[in-house]
Length: 303
Image 1 (cartoon, rainbow, N blue to C red):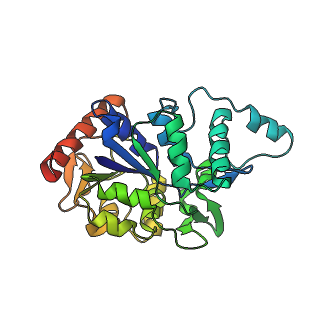
Image 2: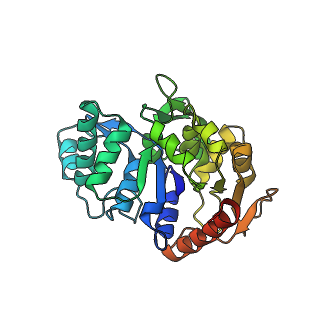
């Protein structure tokens, strides 16, 4: 089994590429929950939901979030009532939030609630949240703290970013089933998502880093000259004391990663990095990269 740590849309693109030639039953995803937010009484988890929608064939791949063809009548009507929400939620997407919140209110942990919803969608892959405990990322911009989703919606100048921190009432524990999933995996892939806001929250979960250190891990740099520029990643790396490039990402991940993958055209030199041609800008390129990664896994982690 191959397990992905999925924190954002770039990993979803890579997973879609791999699904073109791999069975869903051989894939697992531990999804980040640090973008969780209660919206009008319901628990939104965009990163987790993106994976749910991807595997169920509903994901809107124009922006890699939400449900394809969804309407926003509820959100718009709330606006007319003077009750604007911090993020725009589609109507069918909201139904998923309601179902999740009902399951949580009934006493189910987030892992079990996710399994119920995935089962209702007929998903064959293993899909689990990183933790059953609530945690979210906050971004400090010019002295004001913003929830990660608010930051992404407002898109303040990257020069305003001062700190990026996980927020929780108590240190979250990695989900028991997530840890068991990692232990059963022959390889773990950390996709090219934002390493600070989307990947580091995994490592703040008690037990997660130790579990990952026991696995064969491939991590992909989020920087590619052939992909759209992502200045927010550079700014967040700099704010956390890392160089705003692939070398900074490699240092952030440390010894936990066995193979660090860079785009072949990235001018930044990272000692020991594997160079591959990639940019997740099309289905074909995602499939090509996924094929190359599978070759690496077969070579280093067995068939």
